[in-house]
Image 1 (cartoon, rainbow over the protein chains, first blue to last red):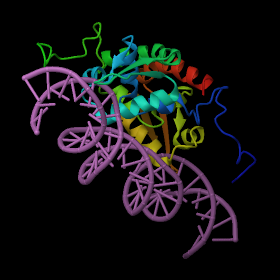
Image 2: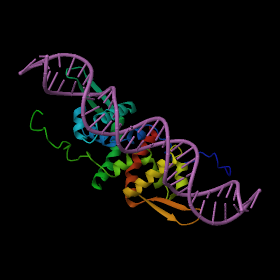
Image 3: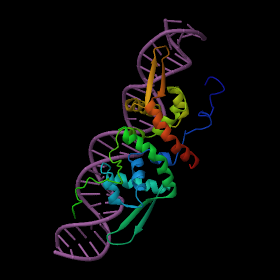
Length: 114
Length: 114
DNA sequence: TTCTTATACTCCAGAGTCCAAAGCTATAGA
DNA sequence: TCTATAGCTTTGGACTCTGGAGTATAAGAA
């Protein structure tokens, strides 16, 4: 507590500030989240087991949790068909597709440099 | 186990596969990681306390851990000046700047839609 | 001389997150 | 009756994140 800047809001970095940045980024800042968005976006729609096949290192429960979070964040839609055995399809929403579009260059670069 | 696809490698999605995708994406898939890359990239170099000011919701130890991980992943460089009191400066490496360039569109979109 | 200040962390215990494996729902077929 | 299928949820143990306190050093104040 030295001078008048003590209670300044901080983060006035040339006009942009990502300080709190809740929402989508928090949702993407979890294990496998970015890969999952990319995988779902590479198809029109996918079933749970298909998603698992595309990301074998992630556990069932983690994929399940990510999908719940995606639905809540509005980037993935879930369509349930009341058949036996049950069938559920996941697809990106329009917002999800926006995220995927912006995510793809990063994932591509990361794949080349890993 | 129905047909010959049972032991297929999976993930042959139109030529690209993000299945394991270790490295940079894992490093970025942690709390505050993307924000930190963006913050550091918005400056030529930053000191620890400045980074803290730009991301007040993250704890000291979490920022410290992220910076260690970034250094290990080769996206951030750490320059230490042996003065009293000590001074340490963080900056993006060339790889870090590549990451930041690809990350920026995503963060901007997320900020607008949060 | 001892106290305070400053910087850049590290250490700690508790809370939260991830994992694999097992269990759950329902129905059709052997 | 037993098995198989799909899409999860539950469990318990390991790993990760959290804020706050503590560490090191030397200049300057009391």
